[in-house]
Image 1 (cartoon, rainbow over the protein chains, first blue to last red):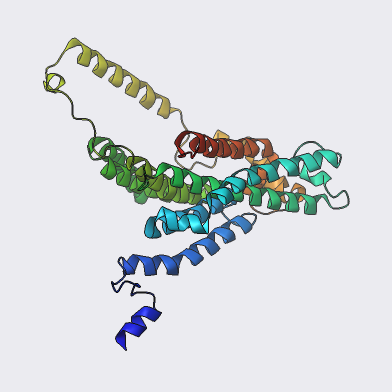
Image 2 (cartoon, helix red, strand yellow):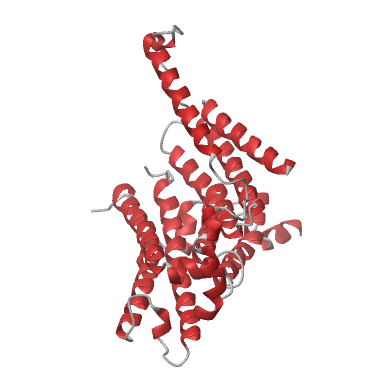
Length: 157
Length: 181
């Protein structure tokens, strides 16, 4: 009876041994969604309060690093694969550059957001800054993940 | 006012401790505390954007990355050989002391002309800042002036910063990734 309830909670492994590091695994599982939500809040809310793409990206990256510390790098690579983080590395910087280029195509200077929508330059600036912050957030998140995953020593080297 | 002095004093103590300890993991932890106190100092100066950056980057990510780097090197500092262990006052060490004292004196002399701590009349606060404070909402349409300056007025600067971060990631991939041929 007892064994089943432990199994249901994922604490009893298939080979009959109990899972190690229960406390930090539980705490990490509990905290990571909130950390990521806070990071997204900081990115999206940078226009009204402290923060922005860089800070929010660092916080989201830190949540993935927390997962990697607790569950191991191999397991966390199943969540954020090497290919995904490599692609995201450049996606954010590319998004920033493309927004700047769109401004130039719309008739302004590079990164002059107010030229994007001629009738409402303030809305255009608002949206331009929003997109740029998201771009910064994507690149910073991916680079922080990459820096940790490539720097930390793995079991195979 | 007293809390500012205490925070700055604690910063100096942390900095000395980080240099003093031979165990690099201890030094890393002290640097983490240093960044956290520094974030408090920024918050005291009403620079909340810098404070949140310092707390997230300085106290959070940098500590983890330094520990990750430590996992690839030795944890302690290199023990010096017996020869340099002798504590004798040579001309070389006297000369070094003289240079350090002279540099410190020049730096202290330089602080005499600096504006007071958190002075609203400081040159940095009266030159271009009023322009941003008055015109940001009108021109950019967002209320956080720091974000407006970073993403709009100095957009090129921020683009450069993002490229630098991107380049750091690419360099780490090229240098440290285990390639499978």
